[in-house]
Amino acid sequence: MRRVRSSHAPSELLRREPRLHLVVLARGEPGKGLRGPRVTLVEADLASRASTASAVDAIRTFVAGGELPPLAGFAGNAGVSLDDALHTTADGHETTFAVNVLANHLLIAGLVPLMRAPARVLVTVSDTHFGDFRHSGGTMPPPRWAAPAVLARPGAFPDPGSATAGRTAYTTSKLAAIHLVHEWARRLPPGTTIASYNPGLVPRTGLSRDAGAVGRFMMRWLSAPLALTPLADTPAAAGRKLADAVLGRVVAPSGAYVDRTRVVPSSAESYDPERERDLWDHLEHLRTSADA
Image (cartoon, rainbow, N blue to C red):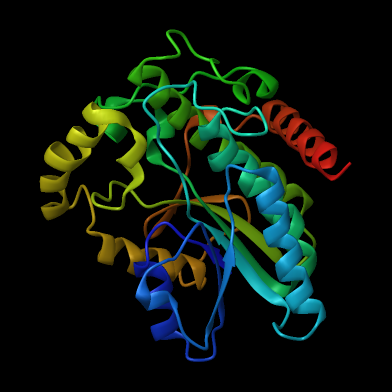
């Protein structure tokens, strides 16, 4: 199953695997290519813990009733990048953290029990988590780690109403997602693996639609020409590479970081078992308090 930001990867998966049935989590109507007898659509607002939990409950009901077979995996490919660090969900969380980190944890925790091994979990991250010029061209600030309870709240970064704070929230959320993948790799049942996936720079995916005028300008006019170089991919090319990762055609051990088509180390900062346990504990606190 997959939650969707672009229709290219799901369409590629359906084309390559004739027996595959996709469960697509989306807010509103996805593209026309994601409709048909081999697609089950489930409404989900990933900024809402209640909506995310309802989506998991719906899938659990489908599997229990035989309308869907046991799941073969999960690909979390949705994400947001905002123009400040003050956007707040109905649950009181900072929106970037809620969508890019917490929603992944809620979905994995709810869906892994519905999977049949061998199963594969993939979480889309970003090479901006390195925080250096090489990986972002100076367009994104480095992550700024803090206690997970602080990161989950609006205003976690200096000058929180600024675009720089919004971009810092994004890079920090992607570092957090890698920490989360490492911790899940320690806890998943035998036969189920998990990996982080970096798609690289992919203009025209809509990621920056909420990033403010400057962020949209940078993505549209400065990044788009890079799609003609090896530094970036078109959405179609990125969809093909993501499909390869989802289908396991990029061989990756559990907990690995997949950079488009190959397994490489993530940043040195991303390997921190103490941070990973702290993040896990806080996310579990939020998950179980939502269930209470």
